[in-house]
Length: 88
Image (tube, rainbow, N blue to C red; front, side):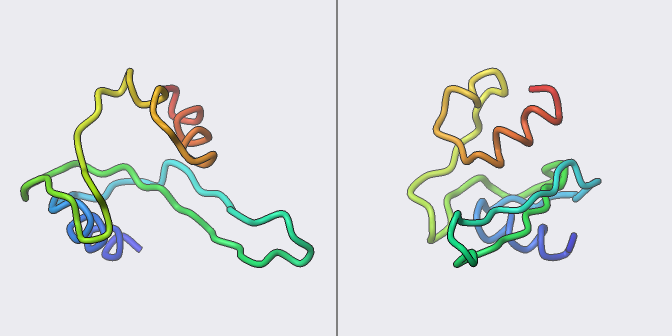
């Protein structure tokens, strides 16, 4: 999984990262019966080690955001759970 994290971060942001421990894991499912989709999301801590921040071909933009401004942005429910868990 760590190799996949490094590859995806590089493809989506242009950054090289040192992947650390898992900080959150959870499920994302729709409300249907049975669910039409079910994703298991695993978030890792990572430290940038190189590269140049740039949006990948699947993003309109990428940018650094001060941690105290993150909650003022549009977030997925799982991102809010992650921020709660790590105390931000």
